[in-house]
Image 1: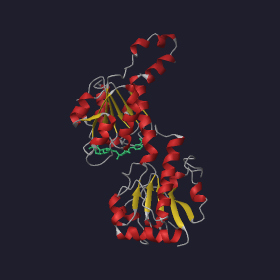
Image 2 (image 1 turned 90 degrees about the vertical axis):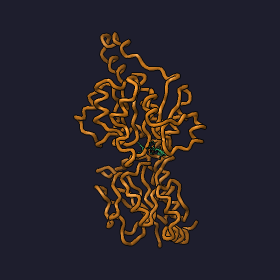
Image 3 (image 1 turned 90 degrees about the horizontal axis):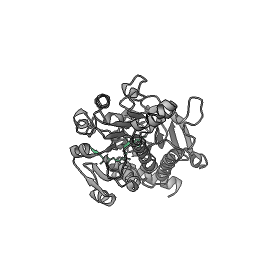
Length: 348
Ligand SMILES: NC(=O)c1ccc[n+]([C@@H]2O[C@H](COP(=O)([O-])OP(=O)(O)OC[C@H]3O[C@@H](n4cnc5c(N)ncnc54)[C@H](O)[C@@H]3O)[C@@H](O)[C@H]2O)c1
């Protein structure tokens, strides 16, 4: 094995060939004489022919299914650019002795900051105040119709207290709010250290003044925020979703927002993405929308990219990377053999 070959999905480049994320620093790959990297096709599901002869894949949007794995059995790591991996068939990765790695370190702070941004903008009535300011004296005269909500003593709730959910509570400490969370798999020690009371699902919806959704999308969480649960929320409460669109029944949420069942919502993710321009939720004044990109900053992409590159180098030098989704892989002899071969070829 003369080179460690790394594939990047083609969507890391814009159609004109320029980088889609200029802050994703590829120089560590480019400058390593033992590494060769190339871009591969992007649309839909990646095909086995495209991954033939590669040891690693850094993956943005395209899907990975069983048919994505070449017969050469060489691929040892897929590093997802971010922490969502609903586009990757995890069992297929394990079956083909390939680690699936995500980058919790890269997104923790940026996504938590976007949740705090939504909370402050919604409770501070930022969008409405911006609108009336631009209307001149007539708008300014309506200032007292746009009273914000103070946060001291109010309740911040998290559906999911993992990597991002926990960071939200860390960042929200100075606001002197009560903290509650529902997470069936929560580490009670983490919750206790953060001053978070773990509650039942219904209690979370009933008690939160600001309710943020930070759980993964899976069979259990699909439409976990539905009409029935939204009806439990206070009419003064705000809902924030930065996780995945289908975690919320968007039609039910639209109805609740139209009817004033809750005060408003901050949505970075939608059931259909990109969501069409005639999505009725866009028409609502009490909703702030961002195109699955509120956390996108120079530091966010630099951090995610650095974490992916580090994971790729870890495997290249026979080390087990952090952020592995399919933990079973670590015990599989065929994957361990791949690491041993890399270590022998490229050093430990
Ligand atoms: N908007 C964005 O740009 C963006 C960026 C990164 C991540 N995300 C999304 O945010 C999600 C959370 O990311 P993370 O890094 O905190 O992941 P994580 O896995 O560290 O945390 C998710 C938490 O949700 C919990 N959970 C699982 N099932 C649950 C359920 N039924 N009810 C309540 N909680 C449940 C888990 O126990 C875990 O603690 C990701 O799955 C991803 O979809 C979005």
